Length: 267
Image (tube, rainbow, N blue to C red; front, side, top):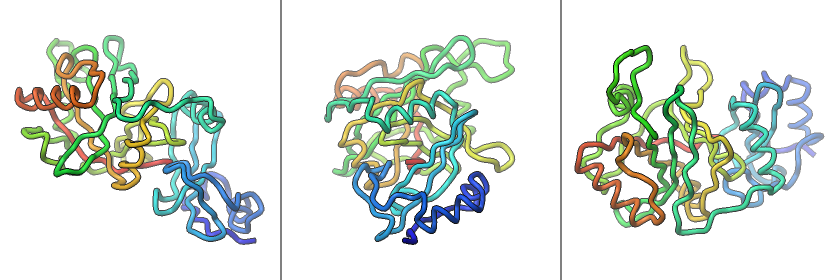
């Protein structure tokens, strides 16, 4: 039976016309599925369904999601990230406890620093917003610079992040950036590719980062994630969301916090 599938031109180019036509005809596409974004049931015979292709160095994984959650697209990720996504499909990864910030997941930056990313919910205008807080473990130098100093915030400001004076104000959207939630877990923060190419990872988790049910529900409701960033030593590891909020407000008061609102991408 034909399926109500959305297959983007990018996905079709990767899998080929023959495979795309088979999917649309219902030969290789599931009828019912669990949306890999919101984790609720979907039915490609009854509702619009997006095909999302994750492409690594050696592996490709085709996933399905409600078209209202995310559009059909190709997302290029590192091979180890793709293998982590495959493991998460099988349920190998557990879920974090609701109401507690998920633990940081670091990624290497050069030879000195890693970026720590913590997920949590931030209350703005009496509404909970899904947020990510990014903090390096060491000062970040400008690429190609031989000098010391910390250029982390200036580099982000050049990319379109804005200074945060008040955490109670929702940050403005940033063009071309997005947050990749794959199989219900956090995989990457994507930035625009050079020359208008496919997005590339600004940050990638070594292993998929668990998020709470509340965080995922808020992200699926707003389709937007607030990304805060601060220099090393500004936020620290906070075991509770109220303490994380306090640390954000202190960093903002000291002029050491930038942020941007990013759409939810992937699945």
